[in-house]
Every structure is written in structure tokens, then in C-alpha cells.
Amino acid sequence: MTDYTDTELMITRAAQELQNDDTTLVGVGIPNLACNLAKQTHAPDLEMVYESGTIDSNPSKLPLSIGDPVLATDAQSIVPMIQGFGYYLQAGRIDVGFLGGAQIDRYGNINSTVIGDYEDPKVRLPGSGGACEIASNTHRTIIITPHTQRRFPEEVDFVTSPGYIDGETTREELGLRGGPDAVITDKAVMRFDDDGEMFLDSVHPGVTEDAVQEATGWNLQFGSDVVKTEPPDEEEIDLIRNELDPDGVYTK
Image 1 (tube, rainbow, N blue to C red):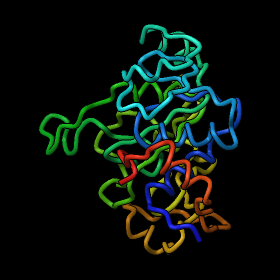
Image 2: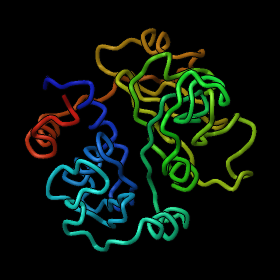
Image 3: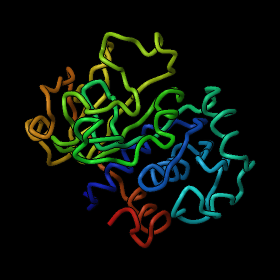
Image 4: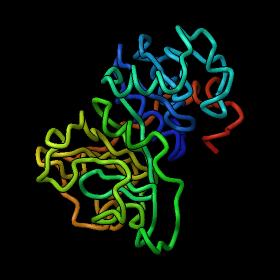
């Protein structure tokens, strides 16, 4: 079996969520590595759009921020950020968005605003940035985060980016597109049922279902057929370590 890290497993699992011909809004870090891995393996026609306004980018090396000039490499066009959000994202032209956050609850709502009471928080976080727009307008979102009970409370302290709200109010009623499709952590992959509630779909090699439950702040539903997550293969690990992130900026 190929040796790999938890981060490399999350990257390869996220890459497998992407389909050929998808248009995805990409951030730096793990989402960027996952998109470029997918493009070099099973999804060569994947179109990557960055928040800074580069459309269908093919970066020649690892970008260190969404404003890195390397993102202009072979891009089909470069537009102002307002056009990227207005013409592409808000118009429903983006298939997949990647998100993370300080808290994710059982309905896939994300908090990146405050921990504690909004008026008197324990911690003030960076806020939405473009996350709420991504969560509201892409056709599906993929959430990537470490798996700890602190990050997975039953209810978030503040809804920065909407998931499936409360399981009763529908996204359609609020005029929102899509919704969370998968939550990928260092322990497992979760998905969402017809009521918008998260359930365990697969556990990573060496991780038990009990360990996933212990790291989750509510009684997590288990899918009818929980499987083992497919580990990275040698080609994927070689691409990550030798081409996509040779200096280990995001993988070490």
C-alpha cells in the first residue's frame, strides 16, 4: 500500500468528487491541489475559475494566493472580480464550490464569523469573504475540514454560509441553488440525505465508525452501507509530491 498523509487522502478524495467538464470555483490550498489533480487524471476538461477573476486557468506552478500572477497562465480570460461573481457565480454558471469553516453543523451550515454570541463573541473570525455567495449559488459544494467535535457542533453559533438550513426550510424557498454535496475530513466522507441531514458515507483506512462519532457533536446518522474510503494510488501521490506541491507548502 502506498504511504500517504491525511492531507493527501483529503486531496485525492476531493479530486474524485470532480467530474470532467465541471466548472469549479477554486481557492488556494487543498481545493487548488484537488482541482489540479483531477485535471491531470480523470477530468482533463475541468474548468477552474479563481475568485480573482481568472477563467479556465491552467497554472504552471502552485499559486500562493488567489491573486498570484501564475493563475493567468493559459487562462481563457481575466475579468474583474465583480464580473467573476456577478456573471459567473451569481448567474449559476459554476458547478462546484469548495468551502471550509470553523464550524459545520448537521445540516451543512457553515460558521466563519464568530464563536459564541454575535454581540459578545469568544472569538471573532474573518467572516464570509465570498463563502456565502459560493454556498448560495453553486450547484454543489464540497466542504473540506479537519474532523473534531469543536468543528462539528449540532448547531453552528452563526450561519455564515447556508447549507440545508434546518432540515425543514428548503433552499428553494430562500432562492438558493444547489447545496452541500460532500464533507471530506481527515477521518471520513459524509453526505446528505433527502432531509438535508449529514450522514456517514465512508470511513478512512485505520479509522473506526466510533472514532468518527466521538469527533462529532451530535448522533451522526450512518449510511446503509458505510464503506472504507479508497486510498490514494501511486500516480496520485507522485503528482501531489513531485508536481503539484513539491515543497510541501500545503501537504506538510
